[in-house]
Each structure stands twice: as structure tokens, then as C-alpha cells.
Length: 74
Image 1: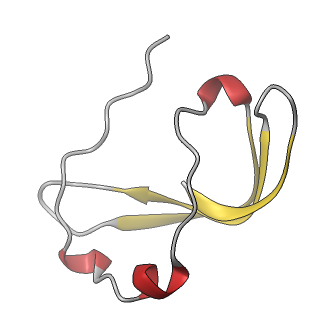
Image 2 (image 1 turned 90 degrees about the horizontal axis):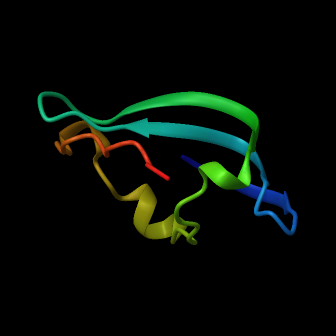
């Protein structure tokens, strides 16, 4: 999931704006599902990172193939 971090709290609940999910597939390019304003519960968060927008804009997501990530298991 990619978006603009608008807020968070002590339990790592996140508020993301302009968010979208990148769905990876081994048979076709990356599908981007637009989510808009989205709240993510902290217990569903595994990793948070910053994206270099300049580098990200040069990626050809239509040609990237990858196995989907497995679900997070607690």
C-alpha cells in the first residue's frame, strides 16, 4: 500500500491519503487499486518506509512481475 502519511498514533494506526495498493502477479504487470483516504489498523502494519518519488516515478510497473506477498501471520 502506498500513500501520503497524514497521521498515526501510539498503536501505529495510520491515516493515509491518496493511497493505492500495488497488487503483484507473476503473470502480468502490477495492478494499482485506488483506495483514496484510508485508515490502517496498527496490528495490520508490518513495515513502514519512505519512497523516493523521483525513483518511483521512473518504474515501469506494467513490466514488473513478482509473486504476491503472503499474508501477515501473528
